[in-house]
Image (cartoon, rainbow, N blue to C red; front, side, top):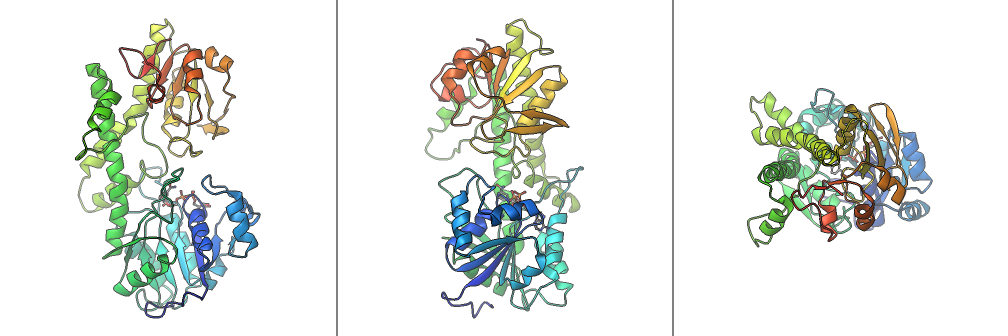
Length: 439
Ligand SMILES: NC(=O)c1ccc[n+]([C@@H]2O[C@H](COP(=O)([O-])OP(=O)(O)OC[C@H]3O[C@@H](n4cnc5c(N)ncnc54)[C@H](O)[C@@H]3O)[C@@H](O)[C@H]2O)c1
């Protein structure tokens, strides 16, 4: 396969996807459903591979039927055998990019994937990095690892960066209809990458370099982190002023231009927004530049769990109870509504802070059956009137759609609502404080 002679539309391209998580498995399914590919999914986890090969989806946005029917038609399969990367014409890398303990980028998963590709790299292969990372990773980490083979990027094989924009739980914008940005290491790399993805993604946005594509993704996520930081600070300000921050936001959002609505809450969560801007901060530190907006937003967003605990303390105080020894029921521990992902969820911080202060913390989340809080295993309890009324304070941390807010308001002795969910459902919170209801 080369830029000037892509296989014709009737030829089946073998597409390998490394990493079958929230990003990789939907990408496999989208490509396989187009009928233009035979897709092989690669993962180091045998459990993930076995689950896909038995027609099960471990990703909430995909059904077992979707995966099962592609399996039956022979359009998709999963394997731990990395030597089969040799069979692939194009390979996308969708492995994790977490932060290390010192909050520096951990690109070891990208290095491991690139070493696996290098072991069988052959002329003509297209390699695309999709994992979110700092500008420079494709050229400085991936390219040298692949070129150790003696093959040259842009001449013998083709190398691109194309960030994934998947938004778990979003039914409107999917992998297929979300425009996809792509930048090639060379003109030929970009051209081949664009023509490859155009076979199953509606719109490609070509940029001039891998670094531009890398920065585009970090810009998108930094934009969210900074704006959430701003609105969280406005929430702290409004609280001091005695103003309902949500009412002010709704009013501001009536301006038809020049304003974009963001909502305050208990803090940042998920695998992307709290993590990705730190990739850019780290890169810029190596260039003697301090990323002030990112650092400030991170500081404000990390303070929000403390603010929530203060609100719990305040509402308990109104009912003459100390936090120490009180029973607190958390509603929702996922990092956002209607998903089962607790990675970096602010609920973990809030629950930990409450426990440190001696509270007896329980939780209910229809999507998260159990979670580990610094070595302590907690289990989601069934949401009953008794559970709600037995707690000294109920705290809404995630505004899942299927919560019955009328039941919650009726049964809770006291309530802290960090998502404006109760008022959003048409119920009335405390007149003097839009975060709490004293009961
Ligand atoms: N989750 C999102 O909403 C989202 C959105 C956009 C971009 N991203 C980015 O996409 C990347 C992947 O994120 P994710 O949420 O899909 O991660 P994930 O943890 O859900 O899945 C990653 C998978 O990769 C596998 N893996 C790890 N190392 C491997 C290796 N060397 N070879 C093969 N498989 C390996 C893991 O077993 C896991 O199944 C990250 O860089 C992330 O920042 C995520």
